[in-house]
Image 1 (tube, rainbow, N blue to C red):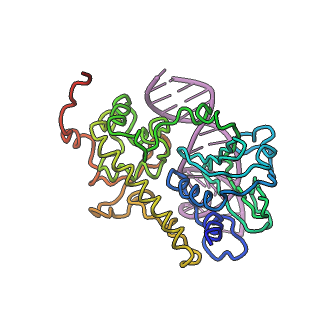
Image 2: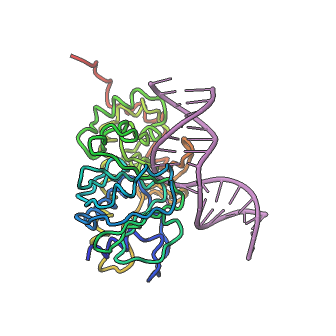
Image 3: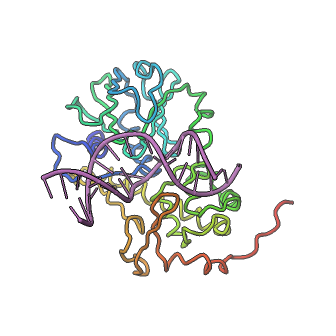
Length: 316
DNA sequence: CCTTGAACCTGCGGGC
DNA sequence: TGCCCGCAGGTTCAAG
């Protein structure tokens, strides 16, 4: 049953056989990747890879040499997430790493269907079920490594603490923000500072924390406790929404509430703030769109005096 | 070291 | 209808 749920949920963009729904884009930041991970883990755990077909030699990067052969014959033990990366742990000690980029999409299929545009990887399992990776923009990619290489993998080694883990403490965040002049919103999107916070949830978290996204990071540092709480709340709410849509899907029959997850500010320029009704505003920071409420997230010059207290001298 | 901006690639919606 | 433009979840890289 869950298999059907997953197939539908993950095949939003290229579902063909009974597609009557509008196409929805899903946005692979941490909550979305975590929801995908949950679904894939439930559907694929224990399955043996029989065949891997690549429609091209590269996505964002070339597939590693012998990629298909390294997967074939292995059993999927479990699927983990680190930042926005998926790690498929395989029997034999191999790890299949995957990133969804901007438009990557895994769909699970009970039987082979006619290939769709941008289907780049088709994996057939021993039980004849299939997993298809579709990615129009090809910002996604895949890699393969031995499990002992995970910690030192070039793309994983520099990633900051998981925001929902213990390593992401107010003290840590304050230290990190204090050393930066860049706008706090840009800082939160830096994967070396904290893992998995992307363009949407950076705006959402700052709204919850009532902080102006333009505030220089070092001036936001005193509010690190609020920021940690707000980041976690924003991410957890979205994950919960994804989880509930997984459960509810069977009853809804086509709509995934997950994709209707309501954002407080993202994408809502000109619309009323849900808290104060002021018009949500938009600006560009580091080339990306930022959304904020000018009333609930007041100007830096007005927040300066709100500093709780002077920072205590550090050390012994 | 930090910071900024361009680049990667396709699809879509708005304006004309 | 169609063309052109800007924009979109992420990350890497070069240059300042």
